[in-house]
Length: 332
Image (cartoon, rainbow, N blue to C red; front, top):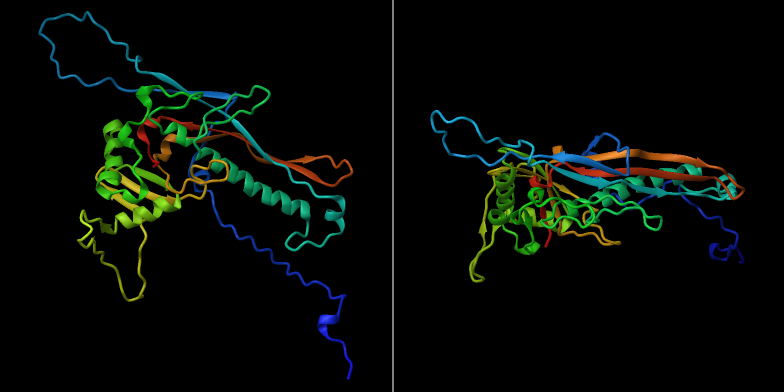
């Protein structure tokens, strides 16, 4: 008996859900945490750093008059950086806007703008966490702001230069392979080096790190690596409630002799091209870092010239690191 089978129906309508699933949950912790300060009023913005003179244990002979004087501002230096503009420019055709039925986009141009705003924030995050040097707009290349990878360096940048007196010491930049990092030598060591450079007891630092380094931090605070391949690792025991049958294996705060490291995962650290440096980590005193917006993420309507609605989502910002001498970095 003849009938119509579903596989023979050529006019079946497609059934799209209005739910739009975006398989990307990578957030922007640095841009969310960092201080937002005064807007720059020039493409190059400057600030001053200073340091105390070294202590002296010499005495003063009784009755001697003052004949020598000190310049209390001799240690001052000027640091600077440049602003950078980023943009995302969505456009949809007139027919797309007016007569299309797109899942998750009742108003296509509004949906495009909402997505562009998220992408702009990621652009800012990735730029600040990069090793970009500063760059001056000459009509052919754009202004670029120097990223943290350049500031936390024993060499400093080439364009955005840091006086040697205000650069991190070599012990504050850990170049050991991630798999070989050790709690005492490296975690305690970098905190010790920062203390020796700038002082400060009980400081709270943020360790912003890639996924591989984050895993290693948890591993090194859980076990101690044996020096012999024929010996078992020494296991460190932690007391925790077993009533919930939950095994906890994550380090969110490492308390060292010279400060605490609050471990925060980053999806955009050390971005170069399309590659993230998952082994990298920045030890940051967030009170000493500022994101200076000249223009916060802004949606600029553009005229429809017949092809459909257009928008330009723009942002102009610069990174200010008050004193890079008090920061650290893991970069194998």
